[in-house]
Length: 78
Image (cartoon, rainbow, N blue to C red; front, side):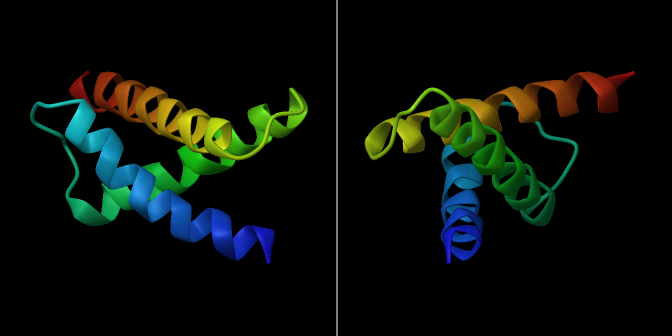
């Protein structure tokens, strides 16, 4: 059940991360959603590793998605 919740959160987090990081993205909505899902997994893993849950997991997921989106932009640009 945790994986399904993380997938749904990832879709939402991808949209939030794209909103917080304005600019032209090399991918569309699908790529952004996938990056959000990856960010949610990264943020969830980091938050659980630090013993945090609740809203901190959301914040960690958003930061993870923003980090992955930033790296994706760097890689795609070159």
